[in-house]
Amino acid sequence: MYRNLVAICGLGTALAAVGAQGGALHGNPAAGAAIYDRCLACHAFSYDRTGPKHCGLFGRRAGSEPGFAYSDAMKQSKLVWNERTLDRFLADPLKVVPGTNMGYAGVKDDQERADLIAYLKQKSGAPECKK
Image (cartoon, rainbow, N blue to C red):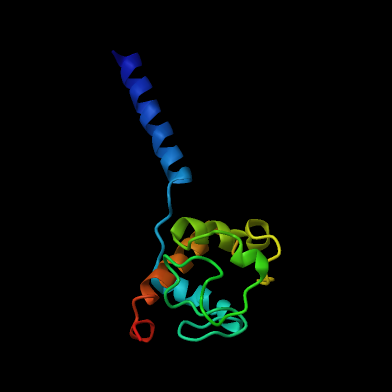
């Protein structure tokens, strides 16, 4: 019986470790706001800059914001922005969309990306995005 209990506890610990590593991290929008400061050189929420605006980002097909001059690579990427696609793209934009004009090395830290995505998602419901 003791051996079975040890085996069950060991399995539970192993599953918990896999869940912690393989599961989605919970983002903190307040922390993400500070990380978004890095994006402000090229992006804004309610208007295009060097990069496209971020209002309406979730659920939007990459390269489809009217009036913005996207690279052909972005227009042809077939990405639809959600937590998963943003996480992949923000980790390494040039790897996920080779030929993108976004010449940023990415946000390498998993928690920072989760925080940034949480902020983007929260902010997408802000008044300036409802115009």
